[in-house]
Length: 221
Image (cartoon, rainbow, N blue to C red; front, side, top):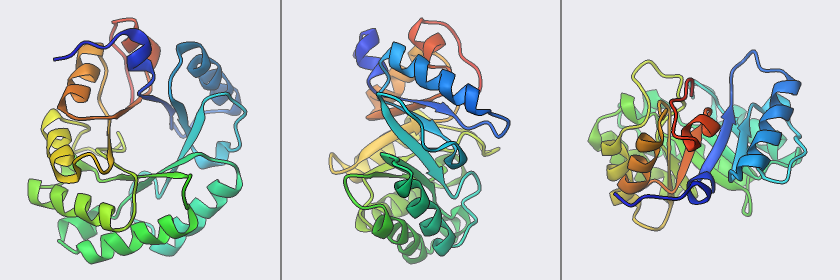
């Protein structure tokens, strides 16, 4: 496994705060810490937008269940774009994925892509721990057809669990180098973060970024 130096690892991190009890002061502190650590971005709840920071700003859409209509997800994404967001992490409808209805999955991703056009980066959270390998492949292919920029393992809120090296490897083998792969959910050590990168992740969703970069053990997302 290739070892990354602190700055290299930090540059792959979406420094994340999605706890529902978070305050604007918490988000401001997150942004300051992200700037100090040199992370790629911060990821915050849509109600916290806009955020003034020198790093990129991401938000979520259809979070955390994904059980919103395509129209609601598109409205949410449009609102986020109007508030200056750089990236959107949307949760797909996991039930549709488990039912094998990849046409419906593609439709809702495309609905969000249509209102969140490039250069806004669109990541699709597939909730990989709740899917079979066949379903993971199917939703990754649907995301690519719909014009997504990334596929992402997890919300970090699903009881089935978060990221796994196996899921990241499968996602990477499916999308090749055409899309990014983001690993998130349950990554709490530097060793685990580097293992995800070695498996094929090009971005990491972490809430305990400082602890992980310092070689300690994080908590939360």
